[in-house]
Amino acid sequence: MEIGNRSLVTEFILLGLTEYSKIKLPLFFLFLGIYIVTVAGNLGLLTLIGLNHHLHTPMYYFLFNLSFIDLCYSSVITPKLLVNSVSTMNIISYGGCMTQLFFYCFFVSAECYVLTVMAYDRYVAICRPLLYMVTISPQVCSLLAAIVYVVAFIGAWAHTGCMLRLTFCNANTINHYMCEILPLLELSCTSTHINELVVFIVVGFDVGVPTITITVSYTFIISSILHIRSTEGRSKAFSTCSSHIIVVSIFFGSGAFMYLNPSSVLSMDQGKVSTVFYTIVVPMLNPLIYSFRNKEVKVALKKSLSRKIFS
Image 1: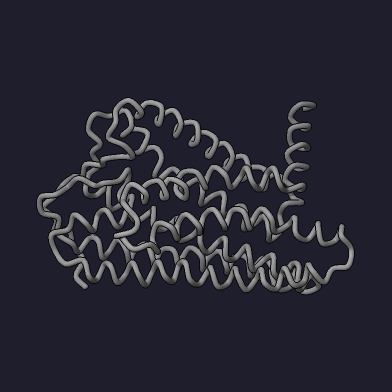
Image 2 (image 1 turned 30 degrees about the horizontal axis):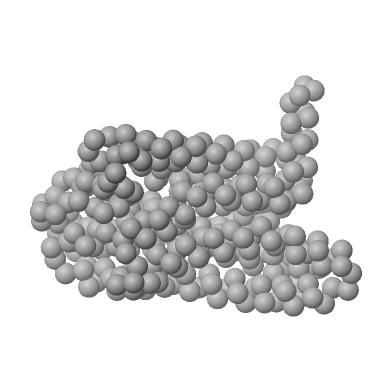
């Protein structure tokens, strides 16, 4: 496949979430607030895990990576959205569009696989507790993290590389608030069959493999929890998984709604709303969910605040 910038279009116009100017300013403040909470929450969680040695365990190692991905993921999308919300003309260069597309695909794919690895971590912790420190050793954690980022890079390059081979002749208005795959394909004046095939294969793999792995992991986890005799033991085991289940449900639910519905059923406006959830809202919710529902994180936060107050 020959990859090159054969486009006659040097810049794109982003329509954004809405064409109505009256609600653009309220949306700006809404997304600015979400972004501030996202940055503060994920930076806070990264700092908390980094400074507290009792959180240097496999579970929090993967949570550290999830927070890093969420922070970068949101920063790829939201700042440009905020600028466009107060601009009269929402313009992004061709190079900027392809760069945003690459990092968007990279981080969304990385999040899929980090959530998958976290499910496997919970499976080993609950179903194979005696082998946990051997099975999920620091070396295995590093290897799993490396696999996550390598697979994400391959998928992102597949999408972006295929997009670079397309020709955009005259139409340059993207019906979205970012450079997303499907709206870009609608603007191409050359065949998009290869791109559509790549989307089907890569997205199917990125959704299918994590879905199967997470489903199988939680099937064994639930079975093991039900065999625990004490109510307190069952409650404690389930509490270590509840945050992850909530995050997975929101992330994969909104993503599947966007990509696995026929275009005739799912309008682009519905797609934009769905994309808002897993590009802007989910990165904000993840640190909040893990902070408020995790006792160890709350204890570490109290200790860190106490040290600062009394220092």
